[in-house]
Image (tube, rainbow over all chains, first blue to last red; front, side, top):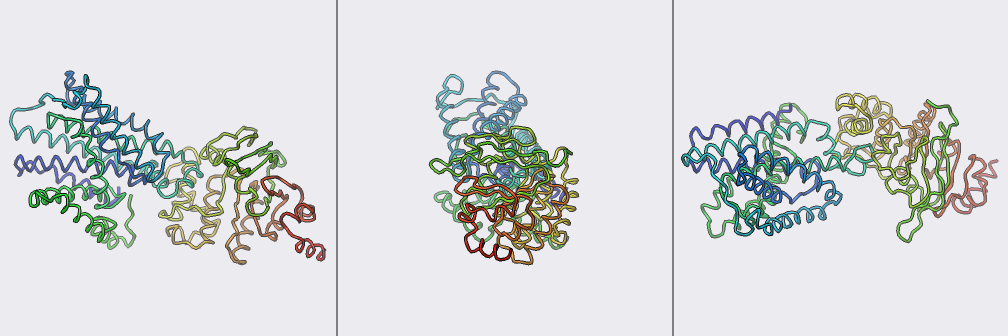
Length: 316
Length: 253
């Protein structure tokens, strides 16, 4: 296990201490932070390792949210519903990935973006199942008090983040991760050395969708009400990319830091500049990317790493 | 291992067109085990397309390719790599961010069954040493010189334990000392019994290394035979070698 991966797990462990000294607002923020980190880590598998800029995060977030929502309305317990979301997103994304990931660059980006629209329209039109544009109410899970509810969902999202991080770390040190890195660097050469790139890309796309789907399910149970324009919001696709770029493309620790910093910025800017918050946030992001093109990870971890080992920090 | 002289690759009436352009028409060719076949011809003759067609990058539009008794006409690139067809690229294709060692390890890892990252890296070291890149093992491929990258390509191809090795202009862009070094490596490989098909423009190298020469012109095979017959063949002189080369050659004897 590399030093950065240990640092990532330590960081996630620290986040778990939040309920000890946080109120309901802090817990809400913490839950969002974990959700964003799940997005960023997931996107990193296909965008950072394999180098395919996916805009499909919102598609699988929404799909996961609706799957859990519908299952819970049919009386299925939360854990099983989440598992349903996870498995459905894994399989569907792998199948779609085998087709979509034959496109490269901008073409793939647009195709993945269209998934969001397609899924939203499907949900909009399947009125009997999803309630269509009216949205879907989801039964309460714990619901004793505001604080215990917030604590429950915080730990649920945190647990999912931990699971995502462990899987991503496992991928990054495995043959799969090695192969995905090969694909990003040179897909022609990858095929030529005997790597089944279609299979690898499909697995990567499936893995990048399943935890997002489960996070969508948790989100639905958490907010009790979802509608298509909320969970299929294209911003859920864009944010993970910004987080990954801010944190350091390809590095699991980097993208999680990116997610936390992004949420912090979003929250601070939103509080102080309610009228022009998107504009201010946009400027901040551009400044960050301009002055830190390789992300936060290049700032401290890279230097410390080099200082300690005399080697160039390797993004795994 | 099968006996020398046994046919390892056979192409019958292979054609490949890119919409209107006929890049290969009716090419029939066979390669026997242990041979070093030179594939020559003018630019745009279809030499690289022929290699791409055999390896499954651009499958044949018609015709049949068999390798080791197996029909591989419609095979995928990664499958052909696992069967033991490996190649180097004319325009080198390294994994730029990876070290030289990991480049070669990738080739060993994905082409061989049951290889782990660790064992692949060990195997990679031996291949890097063979091509003389052991000192650069930890350098990223992007920082290597062209000559080194060409040798890296060769090490990658060898890590795939090829039964048939295609060398696509390994000498293009190298200076004469580097060419000599590369030629020596090819000799060594041929001596080890690897069947080689090499695309090459340097006639000196072709004549030095090859046991047989095939000539492509406008997508057609116009000659196929022993080197000393080929360089006198009027069709080849016309299409590729040029009168000057033929005269100089005749004068020399």
